[in-house]
Amino acid sequence: MKLLISPINKEEAIIASNGGADIVDVKNPKEGSLGANFPWVIRSVKDAIGSKQPISATIGDFNYKPGTASLAALGAAVSGADYVKVGLFDIQTEKQALDMLTNIVHSVKDYDSSKCVVASGYSDYERINSISPMFLPAIGAKAGVDVVMVDTGIKDGRSTFEFMSEEELTEFTKMASDMNLLSALAGTLMFDDLPALRRIQPDIIGIRGMVCGGDRNDGIQLELVEKLKREM
Image: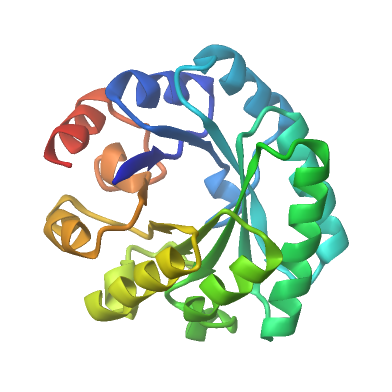
């Protein structure tokens, strides 16, 4: 498993990098689960980290606005993101999801085919009125994304494991692998979840709150990043 850590600024990004993160993921928690940060913040993180780790950037929790999402995705790619991550927050149908992702992939890959697109669904999809993440591997493969992910849409301290079983998450990672996609799991994960995560074996786990001492609104702590990396 690779460790993706989500800083909100250059200073936190340096801590995540020094602590051993495999992917440094720039986001803005004030704007939601996958809230987008500013282009100059992405660029500052890219400049600070260099080639030490790949940079990921979230572009938002999107309802059905494929044009807006495609433009945001291109902005993240131009700003230096190696992974461009979109959340399908209020997507009602598989057809809408496919249209969104196909256009985002087109936008990013036309600019730089080496950059990766990450499509995130939500374990708490029923309470945010969105499609099940179990549809994502098939849709993502058809759209041409590189990674499919499960996160929580509402950040109220409830974990992905409260909304989806270990068996469901294992099936998600298997479906992704069968479609030649990488899988990622996130959503208020805790140190106690590491044994289950080892059994599920996603390619990537996404973390913020765990390395902020439990509150994602606090800052990333170097010693917790190092501890997590050791325990992984």
